[in-house]
Length: 184
Image (cartoon, rainbow, N blue to C red; front, side):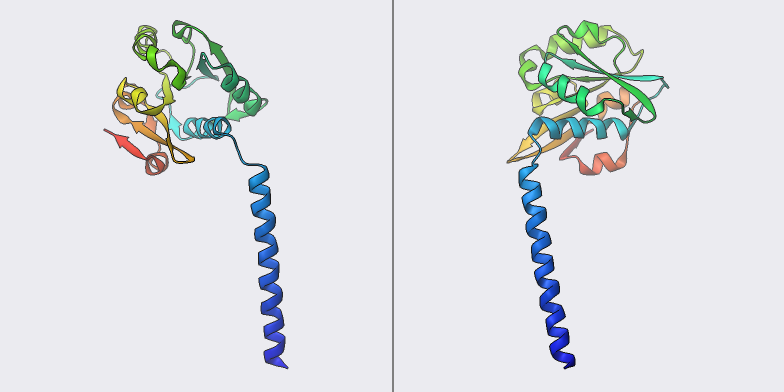
């Protein structure tokens, strides 16, 4: 009787685990995040895992010419705080208007404008210092700090420590370990 009892328990546990796996898989498939949602979640975590060289009351995130991403991020952050700070999201069509932003996101669609965008951001000075986040290698090559890169169906990111260190940002070792590549 002892062996049969153990076998029945093992079979019941196996069935239970299979059912849980099926439910979890179906939940993941039906609620799969879009690439934009993943980028928004990543962006929030980049902010959480970065220390600014100065303190501030409200964290301002600037989005360059990407209304859909701006709307998504605004909805995601509605009523929430990051690092204990209130958060505002500002959509701008001109990089010269990011004067009060702590984070600036530049989408891939602005790839041809990167030189102009970085020139305008640099002209704004370092008050406050701006964490620059964009997409793909040209963004990193132009002096961006963090860039999303597609790897198959996944979204990964690269970090360019040179500009981050120049602005005295402290990027968490946890974040750097997760990066696909860290450029010194």
